[in-house]
Length: 102
Image (cartoon, rainbow, N blue to C red; front, top):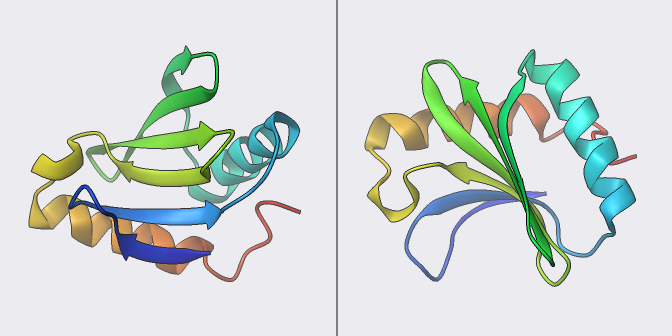
């Protein structure tokens, strides 16, 4: 797990680089329990899943892609505010030592 600024220019948490759908669902369930969140909008595409959730008043995406793995980023993407990035850092601190994918 790592917190990075991706090539598009916004901050994200990479939870796991390579996994399958089953691990995504396990991660989503464990993340929901750990952070006390509910997923409000769930979009399923051919090779990606995007689940929105609110944490501390900001909207984030739990994203799965068969090629890129599982990540979390602000719903605003490259337009995320410093406040969004600070909350994302707080999410990272809360989950970095957890076993949300095992």
